[in-house]
Length: 493
Ligand code: NAP
Ligand code: MG
Image (tube, helix red, strand yellow):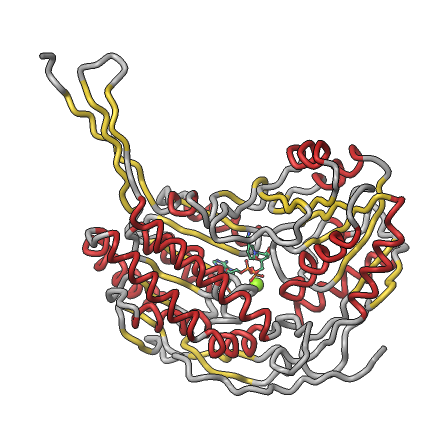
């Protein structure tokens, strides 16, 4: 099992900005402090970026506040055209951006390209939505006055994003905010700041006015975001990350009664009913589990399979997992890159260890790969018992735990038995059941015979402890708009 893998980087880091972006200018942290960005594929140092503090964060918000009124007054078409140009440039530079992303985050170049084109699509979509912001005009039911409703930008925003999709989790917020006429301070994850800095350069090239988008990289995320959340000039916070940190930000947001969007953790069930097309279920499982090395909020976290097809499903999934090639994300032929850091790998080991101790069997994988980089073998666990932690906690790695059920009610009960409610996957060929079960699943999204739900034209988001608010679709821009109503008194004729 311990065949060695290629952990050397086959590309060097492209030329990317490594400074803060504040008020349209690149600069260092006031303190002069920096921190290292690491390649998780081999532990090498890639670059150093500024470790911003409270003073830098405030300067970024100063710039966003100064730009807000002018930006809100620009023509919608102008905002849309900036997004469209940025979409074109990101698309043209996809290989260079993929190299940056793979080196700082670990996933394969093919996966990075897929994320980057997904990320760019939010700019294309919101370039088209920018010109479709509209209000209403109506006559009051009793007559005598007219009711005018208009949409206006919320104002300066704070965006905090995670490392697992370094670009797309940013563009889902930045795209609609630009379209709506909001300004922003973006704080990318400290593990993966380079992709966002590269994007800031592209938006500036596309003609985004100074101060509309500001990027601060920091290792003191709590302090930096706490400072901004306490500042009465901030109007909104949108956060993507863990439920634990999300809860804290919601609490802090109460002080200034901010508009809040929360894209938090997931614990997606993957249901395979007895009438499912197994070819499609296995294909869907590969996508739902192995996309992004399992480090996705939408990743299938647990597989609930009908007893009559569970053995065959497990055998076929294990064969597919076994055939995957591990290696540095830049190496030719790599399917599965490293996990982002050692803590993430340790959590995966802990959850697999707990399941095995309780009686589960690793039919493939079940171990780390020794040597440089944070690699973990794609793993299929069968016979996972009810109490196993892996069924309740987000695994964030390439592990598919399988448990069996006997009837539909039991499957739905198991699927909903979690505080989280982001995504669920359902495989069945029976139309009535497809609709009935989709309606009963307590999640914001359902993949019906589909292993992926993400689409820039659709409202992405969760319920329960997976958060609130939607990103993408026509809904996504509403997060950045306030509704104002004007009552017009009209004298009787
Ligand atoms: P995380 O620890 O919550 O970090 C997310 C972001 O919050 C990072 O920028 C992080 O900065 C920052 N942060 C950490 N502590 C903070 C604090 N006290 N105050 C303010 N900001 C703070 O999450 P993660 O481990 O990086 O990301 C994985 C999680 O994100 C998973 O739970 C996943 O399900 C979730 N996720 C959800 C969605 C969705 O759309 N629902 C999408 C992707 C990921 P540092 O990098 O400096 O720690
Ligand atoms: Mg973290």
